[in-house]
Image 1 (cartoon, rainbow, N blue to C red):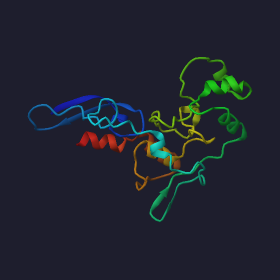
Image 2: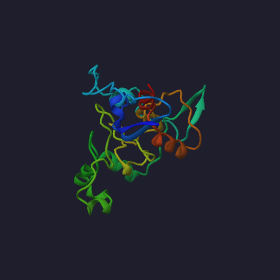
Image 3: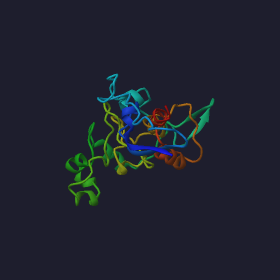
Image 4: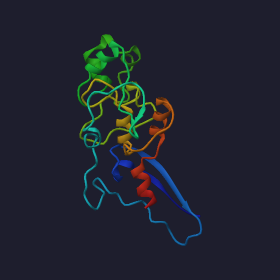
Length: 204
């Protein structure tokens, strides 16, 4: 086996998401070294000079309002642009967070509805209860992207969490891809996946 390995950032390969992952490739029965790393197609290290794909480019055409609360298949297309039914206190929290903001904005503006665990921890991650930045690749999409307390998963402007469709697009899945299972299982598949465009770059 001839191995090739290193840390790749999915954003460098056209994925609208900052996602750094260690990748190991081994091929049996070949001579010499594998070409590594794959040539970046986007960002400052790319030969083309193509800019990173932003969240706006990936999800900006989707309606600001979601429809329903479950995945369904209609006319061969899986409907994943559904939402949740947050309680009023959650909606108040979302409203307190400006574009690009996060839990620190909530703590400053509405300490009365900020969870005590955050009030007692004035430092730490800036992604928790954060809004996706329109004009940047998103933060890493994980398996519980539908929970804003888990990361930067609030829509850039709407007072809601990103939908499963938006998360899938931020992972570079085409809308034609069909996921299997419940919405929780689908979220796990989306969050755990190697972004298709990154996989394509490695395969090439």
